[in-house]
View 1 (spheres, rainbow, N blue to C red):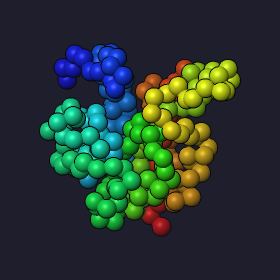
View 2: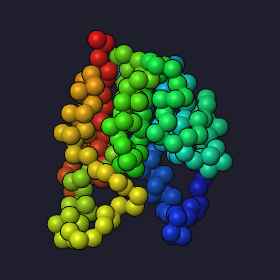
View 3: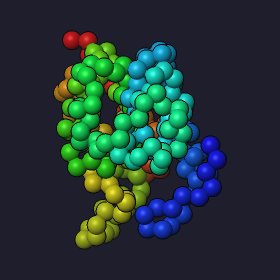
Length: 206
């Protein structure tokens, strides 16, 4: 990938070199779990694919609210569906996908539980669900919650932040087993330092 400059909505430039490195670490980790628990040649749905995970094998369908021209590497996708996440289950047949990944998106949803239920509808039994989302124990939200109680959230466009036990409870109640909960980038999760968690779940066969 060759990105030089990208401006956020507030006009500030993003450091693409650092962002690309972060994405690559996360993508590599996700791809390893997919290969380990799903194998190759499977039907994969990448929800919130604004940055396409170019390391995934198989038949990858992307789903994002951003039009194709705004998604780098969209040509690597088997198919791209452009719509809001709240309409996810309208586009696919029940039990269609072997694996669903949704990276750094859950925190943007007003109704994340409905979204998880929609993912469950279109995921096969025995399928893999992989989620990454910011940690509430990263130093910025921790310090912000302690010192700036009367201010709004500092993370841009984040409307929720799940503690691991709450997300695990909601997903397990839908019929999943937890394979792993770890850092989305490094080898280990370190409180206050690791920015986000990576959750790997497997849907039960019965």
